[in-house]
Length: 113
Length: 111
Image (cartoon, rainbow over all chains, first blue to last red):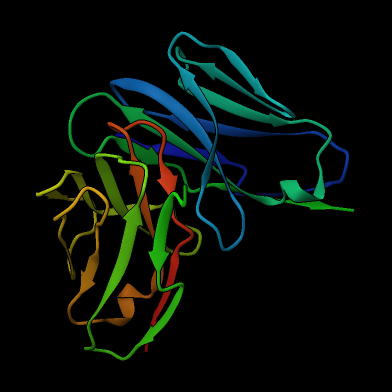
C-alpha cells in the first residue's frame, strides 16, 4: 500500500534553532517527492522537489535530503524564524496515470521567541 | 496572475442543503483537483480532472460531484450536506501532474 508517514507530528523550537523533519514513504513506482509549507488558513506552497537522482537540495534556509534506497526524506530548517511556524507536508508522486500524489499528515512546527 | 482562486472562504450549511464551491485557475493548467483536509489528517483527494470534459473519482468522492467544462473552472458540488462533510476544502491545479498550486481554501461547516 502506498503510504507517506511524517514525524514528528508536532514540534516546538526556539527562534534561531535548527530542526529536522522526517518523511518515510512506501510509494512505488517513485517519481519525485516535494515538501510543501502550509501556513495557517492558507493552501500549501511547494518548497522543494527531490527526484530519484538527487540526494540534497537547498532553498535558502531549507535543505531537503532524499535516500531513495531507504525511502526516506528529511527537511532541515536552519536558524529558524517565527515565520517558519507552519505545517510541513511531504508529498510523494508516483509514476502512472490517474491520482498520482500521496500526502503525509504533516508536521506542525511552532517557532517561539 | 491570480493563480488558483476559490470561493467562498467560509460557509455554514444546514444538513440537507446544497452548495457549489467555485475554483478557477489562470495558469492554463490541464490538471485540477479537489481535496479535503480534516484536522490532524492528510489531504484526501475527492475528485480530479486531467482536462476539460474529463473527471475522475479520488479517494473520498461520495456526496460530491464535479464538472469541468472549461480549462479554467472546476466547481465542486455538494448535493445533500451532511455533518461528515465539515472540513476545509482545497482546490489545486498542476501542469501534467507536476507541482501543485493550491487555492486558499474553503472552510465549510455543516450543522
